[in-house]
Length: 266
Ligand code: NAI
Ligand code: 15L
Image 1 (cartoon, rainbow, N blue to C red):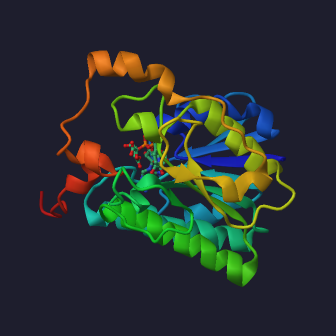
Image 2 (cartoon, rainbow, N blue to C red; image 1 turned 90 degrees about the horizontal axis):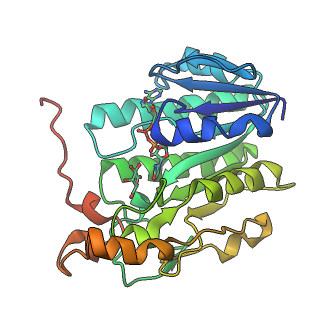
C-alpha cells in the first residue's frame, strides 16, 4: 500500500500497532482525537474527531487501507458512544465510499456476543448477544459495514477482538487473549488477501480454551501462533480463579455484562 490510515493511534492497541505498521505501507497516516506525539519519517499525523464528517472525509482521502481502532472502547455514556462509534463509523464509511473504497479492518469486539455463557462454543453465524451499549455500538458497526459491502462492494474485516494485550490478566482471558504478534499477522493477511469480502473474524490467539470458531476464515491463511495456556499456571498462582457464580466465570463478556447504563448527567 502507498498509504495506510490507522485511527485510534494514541490508544492502547493503537500505540503498539503504530510502531509495527511501517512495513505495511510507504506512508502511515496516524490519527486520534488525543495527542499523537512526534511523527516518524514515514508518518503523517492527523488529529481528528471521528464525529466530525468533514474532518473524516479529509482524513480518508488518499488512503489505500484503513486500520480502524478509534472509538470508545469500553462501556460509557451513550452520547460518547454515539459520537465516536456510531456517527464516527458512518462518517468513516461515507468517506471511504467517496475515496475509492480502501479496504477496512474494523476493530469490533467480543462484547457483540458477551451474553453467551463460557460453556457455549459459537461461530460467526451465532446471533449477536451484546452485553452493553458499547457492544451494541459494535453490532451497529458490523451491520453498517455489511450494508456497505452488499450495496457498494466495500470490503471490511469485522474483527471481534477478544483481549489484545501483552498477556492475559485473568482466567477469562485464557480464552479471549490475542497476542500483539498474532494481531499483526492477522492485519497482514487481511490487507494482502486477493479477495476479502466482509467476514467476521474472531481476534484470538490459538488458545487451548477458546470458545470461538474461525474455521470459515481459513481462506485468509491466518494462523495464530501464540497460546494463552502458557500463562495459566502463573495466573492461577497469582490472580486465581473467580468464583463459579461470578460474571467473570459465567459469561464470555465477563464483567461487562454487569456494567450499568451510565447516566448522561454524571
Ligand atoms: P483505547 O480506548 O485505548 O483506544 C481508542 C482510541 O480511540 C483512543 O486513543 C481514543 O482517544 C480514540 N478515540 C475515542 N473517541 C474518539 C473520537 N471521537 N475521535 C477520534 N478518536 C477517538 O482502546 P484500545 O484498547 O486501543 O482498542 C482499540 C480498538 O479495538 C477499539 O475500537 C476497541 O473497541 C477495540 N477492541 C479492543 C480490544 C482490546 O483488547 N484492546 C478488545 C476488543 C475490541
Ligand atoms: C474490549 O472490547 C475492550 O475494548 C478491551 O478494553 C477489553 O476489555 C476487551 O474487550 C475484553 O473483553 O477483555
